Each structure stands twice: as C-alpha cells, then as structure tokens.
Amino acid sequence: MRIPRPRKTFWTRTVSTRAVALAAAGTLTVGALAACSAGSTTSAASDGSGTTTAQVAATDNSGRSAQEVLDENLSSAETAALADQTWDTADEVAVTLDGDSASASGDGVTVDGSTVTITQPGTYRLSGTLDDGQVVVDASADGVVRLVLDGADVTSSTGAAIDVQDADQVSVVLADGSTNRLEDAEEYADTTSDNAANAALYSTADLAISGGGALDVVGNANDGITGKDGLVIASGTVSVDAVDDAIRGKDYLVVSGGTIDVTSGGDGLKSDADDDATAGYIALTGGDVTVAAGDDGAQAFTDIAITDGTLTIEESVEGLEAATIAISGGDVDITSSDDGLNATVKEAEDDTAGKDSTADDTAADDSATGTDDQAAQDQAAQDQGTAPEPPTDGEMPTGEPPTDGQMPQGEAPQGGGGGGMDAVQEGASLTITGGTLHVDAEGDGLDSNGVTVISGGDVVVEGPTNGGNGALDSAGGSTVSGGTVLAVGSSGMAEAFDEDSTQGWVALTADAALEAGTDVAVVDADGTEVATITLSKTAQSVVYSGPEITDGGTYTLTADGEEVGTATAGEAPAGGMGGGPGGAAPGGSTDQGGQTDQSSSTTTS
Figure 1: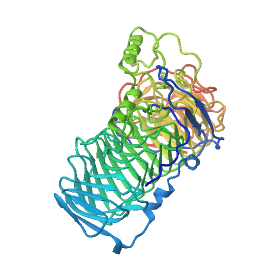
Figure 2: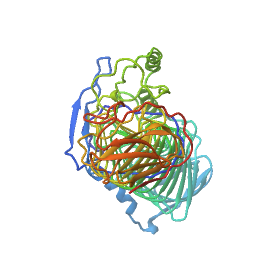
Figure 3: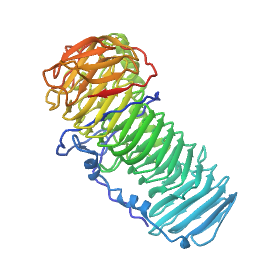
Figure 4: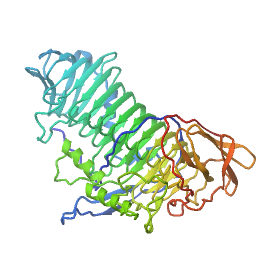
C-alpha cells in the first residue's frame, strides 16, 4: 500500500474566483531585490461559531527568487523522475480497446464488459477505442503503473475515462507520434466516496505525464486532469477543455516541458492543498503553456514560481493568484478582466467539509467572491456617497468601479498601504527577479496584498482604464532595485515605488486621458527617450523605472511628440491613493473610460 506522506504546517486561506477577459500582447521584465531572509507568522482563525480552524503559517518569501521558493517546498523530484524512466518493451502488456469490450495479452488486467481494471504495477500499452467504458487502476502493491497511450480513445458515460483509485506511482506516457483522447461523463455515478473521481483523467497517486505524442482531454462534469497528490507534466502535446478547472495537482502542479493548451470554465492551472505550507504550489520550469480561463489563469494556495518556459494567459479573471508569486525567468503574457497578478493569502477550507469534489470548489468560490449582502451594503454606501467598509480579505469591494476617476466621498480609511484601503497581509508577496512579463489588466496590474519586490527583468503593465484600480497596487509597498518596469493606466488609484528603492523611478501624469493608439514616451532632460509605448487603451498615468533614471532628475511625458506632463524622479505628484508604507502616489483624477482592442508596443533605452 502507498504510505501517505506526513503533512507539515497548517494554513487557513480562502480561494478566490472571478469572470472572463479579452486577449492582448506585450512583454515586460521585472526583477526582485536581493533575497530577504524568509520568516513565517502563525495565528488562529475562528469561523464565528466558536470553532477554530487550522492554524495559519504564511511564509514570507518576499525578495526570494522562484528557485529559492521551490527549494523550500515539497519536492516533486520523485514524480518528475517517472518521466525519465525506461523499460523493456518485451515486458509490456498490450491492452486492446474495441468498442464496448477489451482484451489483454498478459497478467495484471481484468476486463468486465467495457471496464478495464489494472491490478498490479507494470507497463500497459493501451490502443483502440472504448465507446463507453473506463480504464481503472486499482493496484495496491508498491511500484509504478505505467500507462502507454498509443492511439487510445476512451469515453465514459458514468465517470472518469481513466480513474486511478489506488497505486504507488503512475506514469502516463504518450507514445511517440500517437494521438489520444479522454472524455468523461457529464454526471458521475459516484460523487460521494472518499476517492470519487472528478476529472476525465483522475489519479489518487502522484502522476507524471510525458512522451512524444498528443493527448486531448475533455472534462464534461468538472476538471480535465486531476492529480490528488502531485502532478508533473514533462513533455507531450496536451490539450484540455474542462467545464471547471483544466489541470489540477493538489499537492503541486509542475510543468517542466511540452506544449499545453487549456480552456476552462474555472481555473486554468490549479494547486489547492491547504493543509501543508510546503504544498499547494504551481511551478513552471519549462514548456509552452496557453490558457483561456473563465476564472483565474493559474491559482495556487501557496506559491506560483516561474523559472523558465512560456506562459500565455489569453483570457482570465485574474491571471496569477497565490500567496507568493515569484518570477525569475521565462516569458509571461497575461490578459485579465480583473487583477493581472494578485499576491494574496487565502483561508483554508474547514477540514470537516468534503474535499476533492465539485462541492469543494463551489465552497471555495463562494468564500472568495463574498456574499450578496456585503455587495448590497457596499452598493448602498456608494449610492449615499460614503466609502464602503474595507473587506477583511484584502480584496476591493464588488460592483462597478467609479466612472469619474474619483473614489467615493467620506472619511478615508486610516492606516494601511497601497491604495489606502487594503490591510497588509503578512506572507503575501510578489517578487520579480528576471524574465519578461507583460500584463493587460482591467483590474490592478500588479497587485500584492503584502509587498512587491522587483530587482530584474523587463516588465510592462497595461493597467485599468477605470479610476478604481491601478497599474501598480501594493498594500505593503513596492521597491525596485533593478530591471525595467513600465506601468501605464488610469490615474485615480495610481501608485509608484517606495522612496527607499535603490533604482531610480519616475511617475508622470498626463494633462488629460490619452487615447488608444497614442505614442507615449518618457524623455530625459537631454531629450533622450528612455521608454516608449504605443497605447492599446486609454491611460493617464505612466510610471517607469530603469537604470537610465537618475533620482532628482527632470523627465517629460510626451504624447505623439507633444509634451503632456513633467515630473521629478523619485517624487510623487500631489493626490492619488498612496503607495505602500513610505511609498509614492502619482496624482490625477481623470477617468479613462473604454478599451480599444489594440496591442501595444514598448521600447526602453
């Protein structure tokens, strides 16, 4: 029997969900400050009924590279090693799928009508078609169950197409040159047992996917691919279309290679273990991933760490969401209808609730989006001209942002950091030390409920057109020490970098909103353009940081060659919403209303 791994520190966080976005292109690079020493904070939480939930242990990863973050997490090495294993083809058991029946050439396989059950470790080569059946793995002995898909097409009307109920480790190999397809039922016969499947390809054991073939997965009931422990995708061409989450690895989801294209009604990529501070993470270390999501492009309970590869999120509500977001390499391009990147600590679900089921996702979604009562209260407060109560989860109130670029009238919230409304969350951090990052967001572009640390890379943020969000938003402050950052957007909630940043930055505000298609430049005192961008949508605030910026120097903002604003590097114009503690806030209040579907181009000297 597979021995369950011991769990470590407990968390309490809530999962967030949101709605769909349009696509846009661009590149950017960001870098983080020198790595800070990591720490953690612990506290207890109550659900209001006298019941205390799991203990919080949020690790402070601010300033740490993506690899440093991964080094402290639950290791995926054993699962990843499955993709590199070789075997003797003479030892394979051939499983031939034939309509409503199947046959096998050796031991370890039983066939009952159209249900094929693999009962022991070994290598099984599956080919042919099951019109309405299942491949079930129920192998209690230690060892690897290797499923070589070689032209396999499995459709089920009762549950998962491949359902791994018990195994030590599972390796799914896509035979070179093969095309394979898995499709599950719209309604599952079993939704209540401990290991009830919830995906077309479902595994209770650590799962690796590799090979030189192709796999199409259709998730009609819930998820497309789910690994209830860890999931590693090392190679192959994988396409997933799921009504809820496309690819989910509970303990971890690691993509190290291959070409992956997912479409989902829920999150595109997900890892949601909430009982171990070293699990519940997503890592992109290679490969080419494209996501069109009805909710978050990639959502992890603990960390999202990107060291290499290409990630294109064409549609999402929030692009990336996790307590720690660390980018040190690769090329990341995000389009979102809400925040592009959101570093936020979430609450774990009550252990008494059902896990690994559709109900699990629904409960998490409800806790993230808030109640209708709270939304009604916020709307009533806005109608009366008073500021709504700041939410306890660090998120902006629901509803449409103000259309005049101004915040609601009334007393401003006291204390706090970025935006003046959000409480600083210990353990939430957004760190960029390398790579290229482009964000096109209608909410905040880079949003951290903790701190933002940039020390390298190239980053371009095309932020919101409404005055209720900003291209940069950090509750605990933003520091920059290297790389280049160009952030454009509305001016009502605009923020800049903290005054203790070691690399120069300048925050400029145009005299009026600049329309899509405008060529915008930041020009130094010698007339040299240090950064340029062709706007893809209206904007009024421009923040730029790069090695060319000299603290105290005077810089000019031009639009199609005409001067529209000036600023002194390191100083913030009056007004705005305030950066983090010690931060700076560009001023301005003109609203930018509407978005034009044009891609922008940027250059920095």
